[in-house]
Length: 416
Ligand SMILES: NC(=O)c1ccc[n+]([C@@H]2O[C@H](COP(=O)([O-])OP(=O)(O)OC[C@H]3O[C@@H](n4cnc5c(N)ncnc54)[C@H](O)[C@@H]3O)[C@@H](O)[C@H]2O)c1
Image 1 (spheres, rainbow, N blue to C red):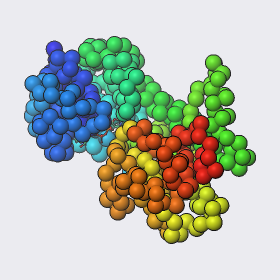
Image 2 (image 1 turned 60 degrees about the horizontal axis):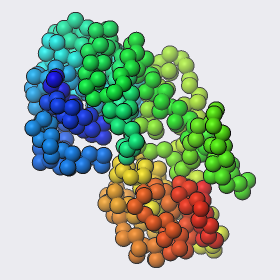
Image 3 (image 1 turned 90 degrees about the vertical axis):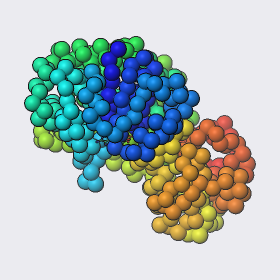
Image 4 (image 1 turned 135 degrees about the vertical axis):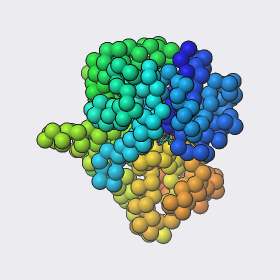
């Protein structure tokens, strides 16, 4: 059983570390955040998909550390650090480059290094490989190097690390074979691609496909608002076609670390080659405009009831980017809150997964009290723990941006 090192123990790295440990491997997890190291070594999880109870039996197999030297004894090291955008929406590889530099200093002959962070095609070979070779070791001969995209979907339970096929692309055939062997320990199916570049682009295709299709239904939702047609009825109807249609639902906009970010990694790479991928840019533009549409829809609903946004109490239900998780990165709810605050609304929120939003000066409020005292409740992220029938029967006005109240008809209820 190989000893596996994981650099970056977040939404991706921690479930991966747990999967390897559960399969009987010794795992060394490294993170730059000392609070995460402390939590794990005390058996506390900070990722919703991993219970403390799942960590308890792994105490002997999973060791969290901040010492890169601990990676020397590993046969494989997997990098799962963030790959965000800079303020000018260009790839920010600093986390990956830092992790690579630290790994290079302790890299051992015979080790396999795998990058899992989502990134543009060419990153593994052009950016990661040269840093690792500063160790004096050569990729493909002294150590192996591959890219394997993460496909985790936080909150999802129908597909797990084991049952989701894993893509791998190696710098050489031997590198790919080493990566295939590694992931076969925790995945039922490993798909080997010819190069890391193909694997890097496959991941981006998956996310761009979602971004473009979400933009399409978001645009249609805005059109339906003008036409007075129920977008949900239209989508439900189209989805009865058993072939040639795949369902995507509109919403308040895209959030999380992946969909709002990843497409721009490819757009950046394309621009280097004088190519301007219009679908990606257009989908990003439509999806980024969706929170403003939602804020305007809230303002219009208040106006129709004879109230101005300025001075009205607006309760936002759900501020994380998706149901069932507490991740607020790029969450459209934050934009909606800011826009309403700028218009003078008295905004509060309820989200059992997000106790506070310090940057907006807000903390989650008690739902029952807030529903009684608000002018309008907006369902932005539909956590399953909330009783939406109760929301509609208690709040004076409800705007639902998730279609979660389908089946309820009430004069105080507006759906996207
Ligand atoms: N979250 C998802 O659903 C998801 C899904 C698929 C792919 N991805 C990709 O996986 C990568 C990681 O995403 P995530 O959601 O796990 O991010 P995350 O922020 O939850 O976790 C990353 C961790 O890396 C740590 N870190 C940063 N720099 C480090 C360094 N130099 N050394 C050690 N640790 C370091 C951070 O402290 C953090 O704990 C990203 O490229 C992302 O695009 C994420």
